[in-house]
Length: 216
Image (cartoon, rainbow, N blue to C red):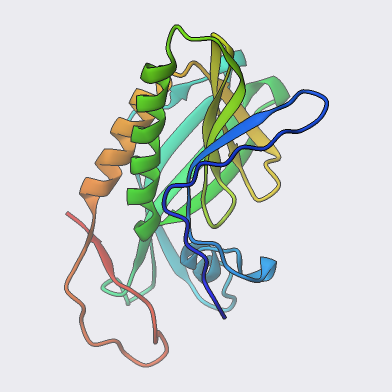
């Protein structure tokens, strides 16, 4: 099995009839088989016959988006009862679509993906500043994680708009002014501060291969 890792990619695609140009800032590692496009957090939570404790730490106020929608970021810590020292942690992103009667979508990022997420946001903020005041053909800048969470922005002429989508099919989405990228980046940085690897400890039988991550 081969992993394909793209750190920073710039690609141009012309799509008729609109001649769309797409700029991709970064993607998380992609796996060969669609069935394996899942995070360690998702895989753990999908296990049956076990009792899990899930702890959430909000990273700030919910972020206001267009049409009354909300974007909510929180760290998540998951572990089996009586096995608190062997936990998985990461980031939970929730989109609430007010325009669709409160429909919600949730995506999880493993702790290792959060640094990529924060770096992609920094790249987007830089591009927003560089392109400000310039006329561009329709251009998208986008970051996607293993689980299918997507965040980015587009610019057409001088008009810009940020967006986020949860789930591999992007069924839940939110749109926001590109200035909100600053707020999302600040919350991603706070998640990085909290999600620090702790020293590994011997693992008991039954949890082979799991990684312990700790909150400060």
